[in-house]
Image 1 (tube, one colour):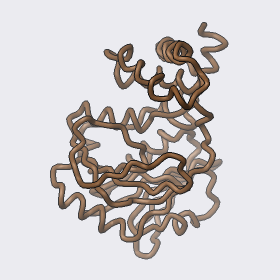
Image 2 (cartoon, one colour):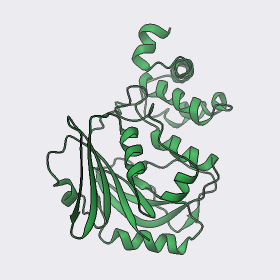
Image 3 (cartoon, one colour):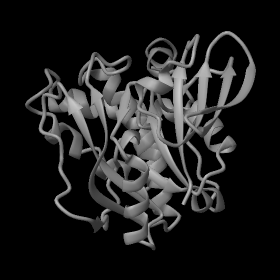
Image 4 (spheres, helix red, strand yellow):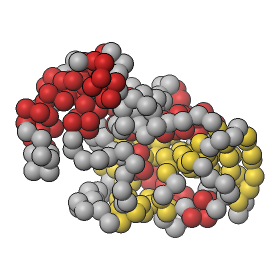
Length: 269
């Protein structure tokens, strides 16, 4: 099966990114910058579609890459990854061994990560359709397109609305559309964990955005799901239980009004 990386990046002035990430397959690169242009070229025999765009927002880049993809299998990729050697063989072997899989989640080696990275001991079906970060995700392009699943452009870095959870909503959409997800023990890539461009701690802004996410992913049960969060982060936040729930509730209200956190704080109360 053919494989394509779907790479989101910004302000690249040359193609050195492709060497840094250890490219060994076809790729679609969406480079958000100050110009509009398209190029198709070959790197070590692998076709690369490179699109420079004025658009902004991570989810918009993901959707543009998916729209321009042509391969059987797609790999979500960020520009700070280093892909494992022979990743195309590993991915092909995984889908060959799991022929009914629509998505397969791989391990990621997080360098400098303060928490122990979850390790999948063996292949298995994800029965509770857990959310995984986009750097773990691969999928059959045809199945995603058949179900018309895309990334929600109100969520993710650069969206101007809610700073994260675009990958969580994508996984939730796959689940609601009956797609099958499996885990696989291979390591897809390594990522150096540096300071996040959006995560500034478990503060009121973070939980406001959680409220927006729950409004989309669990509209009927969001008032039940919200109680999970103060329990999960109680040892790693300075916010009280009450403050967390209040911030999530504000996110519920703000999402209905189509307001981001800062707009809500000035206009929505």
